[in-house]
Image (cartoon, rainbow, N blue to C red):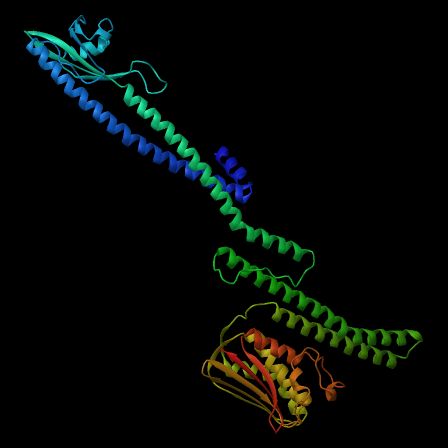
Length: 457
């Protein structure tokens, strides 16, 4: 078990091109060996059949001559014979084997008992001289038993087979070399794009964030699909890097002001002794700035989480319950300001991610209460395959120049810059809509402002 595992490990450490060439070479070796073996077997069978037919015909003629007591007839080219008694004495034979026994004592005994003996003398490889194929059987002649041995020389047959083996070996070696060369060239050509992609990835690792791989547009094979996949991965990496840089820039920009205010409050408090009332006021100011930092950090982290995921986790949710749960925390604020907050939501079930959609609705209601006037209406209904959710108020509406960038991060209209808020509420709403595969847009209705979410559900 250890040796095959070690071989597999060593094979796995070889370069891909080397492994492919070895695999082609081994496969071709097996195919060529099988083909050569089949060809050799068919030719050998044909030659042996012809040799067997000649030998059988010659033995039959010898049997008839021995029974009739006549001289043995001439046989095919290279034929030999011996006539023996049951003790092995040669009673008649061809000149070349007159003094050379063709049968061993055991074979003579087998033939004397009425069995046919067949045997080859000499081998194909290594080459031996005077190779024969013989048959021997018992014949009754004049009331006595004789053993007739018929043999033919195998020289032409063996020579033909050796020549065939040499030609098959030569052709197999040439075919193996050609197949290995073609396999090597094919593997190199197939893996050349992979090497190009690797070089591109190395360039990316050196800081070239805008790099894209050169993928042919007129192909659709595995390597091309790999290139498209890598390009999509590079797009995602670049988008992630952009989000990271944007997150750091936004955080550093927005955190600078509250941190500076905190530092100023603490410096003033430490500059000279303060009364208890003054220290309490300072701590309340510090508490407000800390809460602002917490809200800002949570908003930035929520935006980053939404932007770094490909999909939201959809689950069936009762629409009316979802909207009422999102609006409920703001009812007291609306009542305190003497404003009405109404909900008109269809009593149906939708598939959305309530974890993100609930705070998005809350952000829209909070914006309407903070920057709008009059009653706030929240409507939600399903139209065909989509959910439309609208939050409207009767305030002055959005400044026209602000509408195109209303959903940008930290975008705030000039009139609202002195009010509370970080400018991330609508950016969060837009991110939630995008994560659901939908859209968000703001508009002025003539009676006030409205923000509309269209989500597939």
